[in-house]
Amino acid sequence: MSSATVEWAPGARVGVDVVGDGRVVVVLAHGAGGHRGHPTVVGLRDALAARGLRVVTFDYPYASEGRRMPDRAPTLVACHRAVVEWTRDAWGGDLVLAGRSMGGRVASVLVADGTLCSALVLYAYPLHPPGRPDRLRVDHLDSVTVPTLVLQGSRDAFSRPDLFDLHIRSRFDVVDVDGADHSFEVKGQAPGEVHAFVAAATVSWLEGTVGGRRSAWNGPKGEA
Image (cartoon, rainbow, N blue to C red; front, side, top):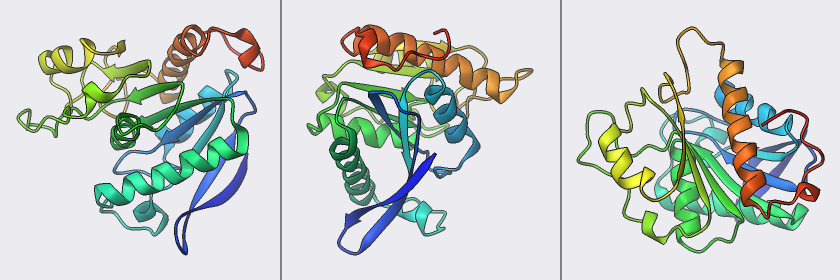
């Protein structure tokens, strides 16, 4: 793993970690209650890297500063965009935007606003706050035109099944994570097993989506 900092605004920097060495590069954003070192983010990062991807994780400003309350949307978007551009400048290749929960939502806003990438991967998309299905977060999704995969747990309190089918499954490719909650926790399964399943499903989809070129990978180190 290598680490660096990225300037997202004049005089303001956030930390990034880079794992793996594949030509396909995934920028993986964390959720509202986490940071780049959160166990779920690290588990997904390492599982994806083990299958031949280069993975970039980063902190949003509030996480970098040790604050609990997420930044307002313009700050999240500005920081996320800066990390994406830093990644593009550093490696080029096939760039995939990905994120868990809030991080996926911000990634989808970037794509809807025209940020160029080869694909979008959303882990546990927060379709609405728990218990508030009237507050849907879908207005921008019609503007997402790149290939998109959504991996969603069947017990996710942020995604009522009928609304998920209507607004997400009807638009994008979906992999259901049976028994998983919003944190991808499955009763009776070790976190590593769930992360491995999610990473394998991601890689399998990307292999068929990002040009379908085996040459784009440094030989995936696990079966998808």
